[in-house]
Amino acid sequence: MPLKYENNLHNLLKKNSGIRSATNIGTMTTNEQSVINWTRENVAEWARKECLNRKIIECIVKEDIDGKCLLTLCENDIKSLREKYAYALTLGDMKRFWFSVRLVQKQNITTLAYLGILPGGGSDALGAPNSHHHSLLSSMGTSYASADINFSEIERISPPMSIDGRATCIQPEFFKTMISLGYAFLVTWITAFVMVVVHERVPDMKKYPPLPDIFLDNVPHIPWAFQMCEVTGTLLFCIWACVLTIHKHRTVLLRRFFALAGTVFLLRCVTMLITSLSVPGTHLECTPHDHKFDDSSSVKITEMIYLRISRAYTIWSGLGMSIQGVRTCGDYMFSGHTVALTLLNFFITEYTPRNLYFLHTLTWLLNMFGIFFILAAHEHYSIDVFVAFYITSRLFLYYHTLANNQALMSHDSNRTRIWFPMFSYFESSVDGIIPNEFDTTAEIFYKLFECVLNLKDACMLTVRRFWIAHGNIDVLREKHKQFLNATNSQLLFPNNLNQQQNGTAAAAIARKPTKCNNLDTDSIAAIKRKSYGNTSIEKPINDSVDKSFELGKEKNL
Image (cartoon, rainbow, N blue to C red; front, side):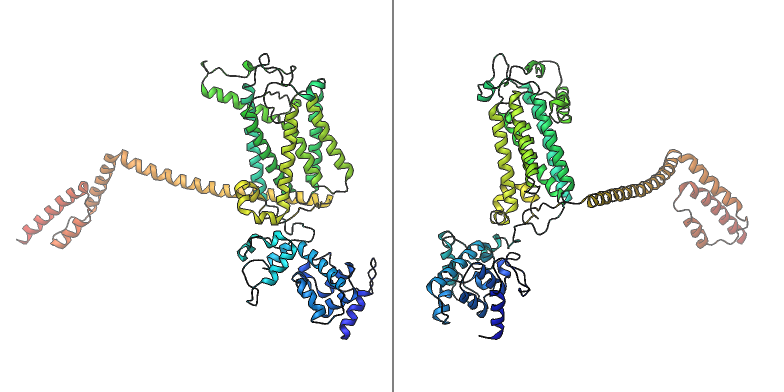
């Protein structure tokens, strides 16, 4: 065996299971980089951690098996180590080596597909049929071997991400965040208007009593419970605002929050508009004639629309909260308060470190107690609260599952664009999990100061552009006024203009010398051309020219 191989083996086998010696390999460990980038030493270190035989590690170093070779090994290659290369390996050594290799290959199936090692009727780099790769994937399971995959599908499979699945490049993308904010703002207005409509359609309490409900029938009404529910929601919102303030990727969090909140509340508009449930409690004051317009009255349609919009504005400005003086009925399926509590709870627990057990327990308690207070106040049926919690939590999990798994996004990209167009647009540049990284106090103040400076510069630039444009407009307006005044004076006073022109021509003729004895036809034609077709001036000039011509003719005779 060459000396360099002996030295490498000595360095690898010298390490203990929990201690790294000073003679460690000067490369990254197997946990710090992907398998495809492993060197020969990394593969040997991996074999040592898998408790493989020393002879296997010697084969890896001597045969120069790196990460790419490890991912493309098949069972025949391992058999050839003993049969063709005459390594003294037992059957157990080869089987254990093959099981470990197959486990690594299964964990990196996306990398294999990205490298072009796919089953089907293709060929490898040397032009031979790729039965080797087909048998390799067949050994990983029937699902990979039976899949109808060809080389054209490489584009649908994402390239390898980081080891822990985190996003590699996170852009703020303020424009997308503003679009999501506008979407949520529009949905809140639609929700407020729909709440006004369903309030007008609420069934009569005398004719339609409250429906049977397991919880409401067994829990007495607590008058102050609904206000306590909104207090718990306010506490959750304050915690969420603090998380947004210190999180490094706050724009992505805001974009996702607005997108999910807008989608859930838009779905709520549909459900509460389709079917109107009866009032869940007799303590609620919901009379249809107080909130319904009589179409047979003399009220105009514009006035009806204006009154509905004004009521919708009252609901929107009060955020639909009773502590803000908003009281509505008919918006039962499903609970908007439960949606807000659940969204805030899930976002706080998702975007804070996992070791903050006290904070996560507190948010879950606030969420559950808020739901209990809603039911104790008899403001919603139990089915309203259950459906609201289920839909909100499922949408949150589905959204983040797709956003965190780039392979799922790229594999079903066409279907995702059709069913989730906003998701495809908002998460197009996110290629992994958003890490929970936070700013220090100094960084927060620096970013706030930078934001104020950028806002000031934008305002100054806008004012300067407006001032320049406004000054040019004034100059153009002044010139336009002068032009109009001159044109109007010519159009309104043509007689004065003709008189002035006649007087000017007469004065010019008077100033001319009286002696004009030798006038030939060329001079007469030149004088006539100076008139430029002006009839008011042409006549006196022609008369004077004729008289001068006659005098000159008599003198010559």
